[in-house]
Length: 175
Image 1 (cartoon, rainbow, N blue to C red):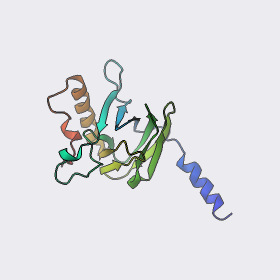
Image 2: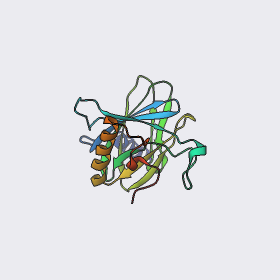
Image 3: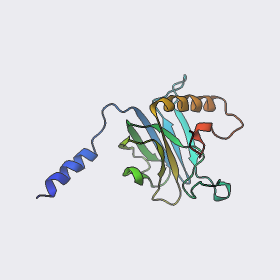
Image 4: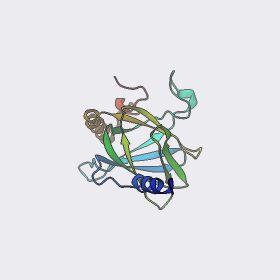
């Protein structure tokens, strides 16, 4: 009984939904990649900001990049803010997890799972997948940087440049 009561309280607290998150994002698992959607930042035609995140092939890695963890487009989120992530899959079972944050959520086709995240430090957090078909990385920015990143993503989606990804989504951390 000494362990049961605090355990139940903790289980309920873990499933608590944040009433007013700073940002809501959606992660859609596909075989070999993830699609991310910033639904809070709608463009003029009311479509949400969406991009794909593919793992960088081992031959294309630069010095210092981590094998099977680096991606071409990172999910950028604000630090010190409550976040809501909706997770689903388009094809097979996936698992979206960030071990360093203690977060894991299954992506099941036809089902929309929801998790609340509070990232307290800026940095790069790697998404580890239980499935061997996908991997991605999160880049956590300060609140002032997130608006710049979203504006850059919107500009990129409206008129894709010759460069395959915006500067803020590169693997090396901006200083």
